Every structure is written in structure tokens, then in C-alpha cells.
Image 1 (cartoon, rainbow, N blue to C red):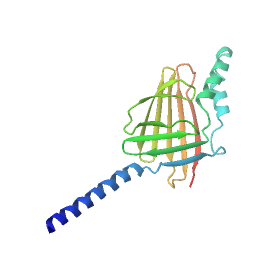
Image 2: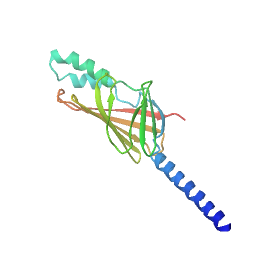
Image 3: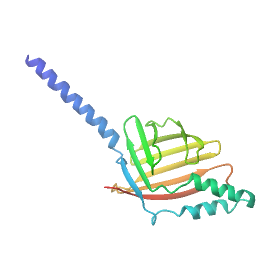
Image 4: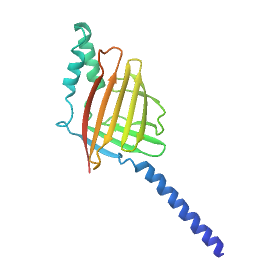
Length: 176
């Protein structure tokens, strides 16, 4: 009977340790949480878009401007949650983007209604989101500050239709 009780206690202890290590893996990045846009520390998206379309010819400029504004809304709120198997990012009131944690891509509909392949991968205090379509590629590189209060999203977009890469940053403050 003593052996049974010892074995049972050991089994319960091991399962508790395993469960807490799984939980620690999911939360070790510290990125999980909700963040609100800090406009003063963020780049002005209208200026970024005007700079990008300024080099295009007059016929394509208006079309490109409209498309870029649809593809690059200033998200007011970003919520990130992760587990060992899945990463979820929700922006504003849109449906969450959920992908496997290991970086496999999933089919997803972008803010402009276009179909893209999306993938996400966590690495320490960074989350890389990649969107690929026939029109180009966008990478949202989220980095959490050392104090855990500030999330910076560095966006890089490339497209054969653009004369240059578009790059800008959006800064978010953690909601307590």
C-alpha cells in the first residue's frame, strides 16, 4: 500500500511539473496580452503611403494609394495569445488570425478581402507574422520591450507592382 501511495504521489507530482512546463513555454515570450496604439510614437501611415505612391505614374498612383490604405490600416488594438500548438492575433474587431505555432501557413482573407497565405512564429520576445499572395509579401515583426510594456510592430511590404519596399512601425502600449 505504501508503494502504491508513493507511486501515486510521484505520478501526480510529475503531471503537475509537466503541465506547468507546458504553460511556461506558452507564456515565456511574454507577448500574450492586449495592446493599444500609441499614435505619437508610431509612423504616420498616410505619409508612408504617399511616399510609396509618389514614385508611380499618375495612372496607377490613385489605384495604388487606395489599395495600400486598405492593406495598411492603423490597428487601434492588438491582442496576442499563444499556446504550444497555436498562435492567435486579433486586431481591432476583426476575426482572430490563428496559425500553428511552428510556422506552418494557413489560408486567410486579408483586410482588403484578398486571399493570402499567413504564418506566424514566436522566438523569444518576437513574433513574426508573414502574409504572402500573388501581389507580394508583408511581414509584421512584433517585438516586446525588455520591460514588457511596449510592443513595436515593424511592417515590411514588398511587391513587384511597387517601385520600393514599404517599411513603417506602429507602437503599442500594454493594457494592464
